[in-house]
Image (cartoon, rainbow, N blue to C red; front, side):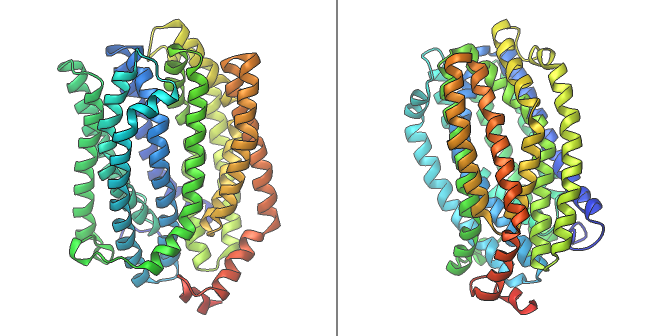
Length: 461
């Protein structure tokens, strides 16, 4: 209980920063691991292995995006129950979410392994990488059985204000993963598939340790098989919040699949360059993603406590922080793009394509940071549908068509330019909806009229 943070009290900026710092540490470490892993793969296994990982990622992300959306919604529901002191419903939410995720993990693991090779070919995987990509993809998908519950447990802890503990177990998983990758690839000269096995082993060990920790330190949210019960009413409420988030994440993932298919049309060099660049580019997105995620949980707890003034102050603080940090990181990436790319590969064509991507996107990353902050207010208040609709419009009406059309005239540069155009439209739509205050009105009206969870909050209105 000592590590839980009540987000409804204290200075808004300091509270959000205190909550976000552990998330930043975890995200930085996770991205550094991803970068180091790419260095190992690129330097010891070659650009074909890099391309195999890169072309597998959009499909993996498409599957995990649904779980990301579910855990975003779960964290918001947990935050609302925690903020309104509804501990019985909180416990039911945890049990229901675990049962749901285990069933879904079994289904998706089976489906992914059976269809993986065909999906990779459909995406544009060429003969020089298809065998490696399929083997890597199949093993990685086995990890869904452990990654899904691991992410759900993280969401529960974040929902009750404990953003520190998940980082410890994430660090443990990263260390295990890195050590095994180094041993498998560098020492034992195993192939690309061994890196996927390293990831699965790290997830299994981290999940076991996290469950043991929660059962010992947080008995009121303990995870015990004999206590697991499925509550249909709770499930419907979680899905009401989670489904739009899941669809939103899935739309983003399918966007990645479509972009990869466009990139694949320019050959293996383009796939490898894009694959490495997106891992580097993830560093630039850390301030926007982490502080906005922190803001969503901040909003969830304060909405549950009906503290709307704190929500607006929290948004202002988040915008100031994320914009300033994003500008600094983007400038550094723009300046050193080629130098950073050369750490992963010595292939000139791959370096040129990757650095072109990095320079293009990082000129505009501040648009993404602002858009994501506004949408976090909607998600935290439970209005996840509007975030989904804005994302659908920005990606499928703007980004994909522009990327496709511009690529016909500008090559890979045209693909990259379509992305910030979509961000700009998404920002305009998000800002307009925030200023309308309809998200705030929806939450209040829902608490007054609905009899689905969390009904007890209505007593405080």
